[in-house]
Amino acid sequence: MTIAQTPEAAETAPATPSTGDRTLIVGLSPVPPFAIKSSSAQGGSDWDGIGVHLWREVAHELDLDYEWREVQPNDAIAQLNTGDIDVVLATATAPREQQVDFTQSYFAATLGIATLRQQQVWSVVKAVLSPRFLRICLWLSLVLVVVGFLCWLLEHRANEDMFNKSPRQGIWDGFWWAGVTMTTIGYGDKAPKTLGGRILALLWMLVAMGLTASLTASITSVLVLDQGIQPIQVQQLQAKQVGSIADTTAANYLQQEQIQFQSFSTPEAGLQAIDEGRIDAFVYGTVPLRTLNQDTFQSRLQVEDTGIQVSQYAFALPTNSPLRKALNQQILQEISESGWQSMLQRYLPDSG
Image (cartoon, rainbow, N blue to C red; front, side):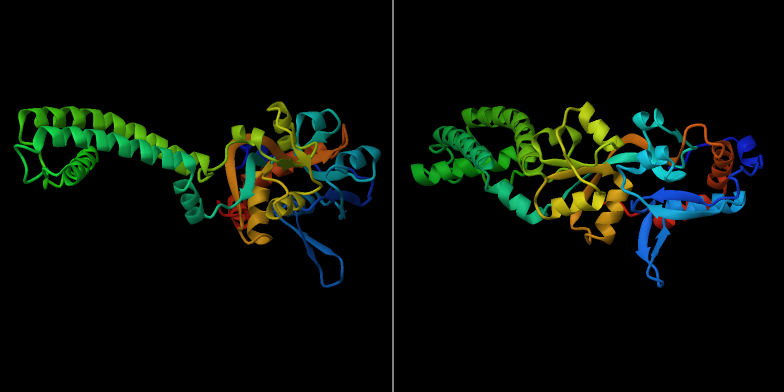
């Protein structure tokens, strides 16, 4: 998702900022698809990704010399304040904004929840064998037996062809009739002929409509909600072992919701913990989680987008940095060009 900008901002040529002819140190951490690290042929590291691509374009237009330096996500802002680095690819948060300045954002991030992908067939089998589902089946069977028995009592003398005089066979005939009537299938092989039987049939059809709706809701609850077939929601995290990265927008959101979480150093470490069964869910940005899931974990995990917008990707700078104005103007110009959306599609992962 890009940020809207005015034509005036895009058309204004930014002035080249003064850096004293020195090389800028740009800090970044591996957070695919914004910063993707790979090994170079020379034995060092090559960097790619949305944020890396944007910085290269901006630096080229502003004639800035720079070099990359990998930093730990939790240490990046501290190193920026101490002057060890000059720029950081980061997410803008309220606490960070009090410590450093941020440029114009270039991507709006939503909160994602990664969990172990459920095997659908096994989940359904577990649901069908669950005590709650078996109780529903038992309760329904008892209702059908009672209705079938009443129908047999009213019909077995005058309607022996459809409701056998034998109690054992006749009650089964009534059970079958009650079941097909409730489901509105109505094969027509059995139908009451007596006045009492027909009144019972009318009452049963009316009751069965409400009963069917109630049963549908109960069975859906067992199959979908109780067995985890439905995507996990934020509210369900209270009862889960949750992971995140400290001092991030995801962690801040969990703290606001009073959800306890275990802190990890990187998103990859958190997803590895899910894969090994050490935690139930990992909360972070949707796009990085989906990228790691596809590229590193072969889509073994399930990543759900909550739709909750929690952060903006931008470049962090020291407070009152002379670079900020020129960078803002150039970033707005870059993300307003037609090629920006095409570039995003090249990096962004598929849903799931």
